[in-house]
Image (cartoon, rainbow, N blue to C red; front, side):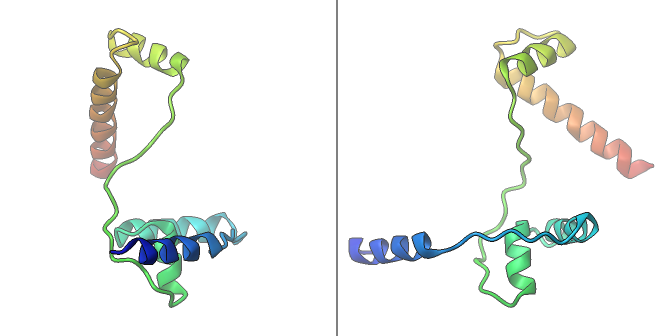
Amino acid sequence: MSDKKLWEKEKQAIKATQIAFDIGVETQTTLKKLALDNALTPSDQIRKILGLYVKSKPVRPRLTISLSDDDFSALGNKYGLDKNDRIKIKEVAATELIAYARMLTRE
């Protein structure tokens, strides 16, 4: 793609306006669950419902969380790990989340 075409796409992106819908908790929950079931982001699910163009880029199957130094200390203590071994803490936390989700699906 040429620099000129790239710049044009960049200009179009700048012109986009983000809007927020105040549509109630139940509706938001329903749409977010639908998005998950369809492997879409909530934004892409809304675009699909509204009949707008949706990029066919798949959603990465990951969850994110922001952890402070205190959070890493707490998790390190919980798992018996050094608070600075953040990769191991992440691995053990992921294992805990997987086990928790599996337990819920068995109930």
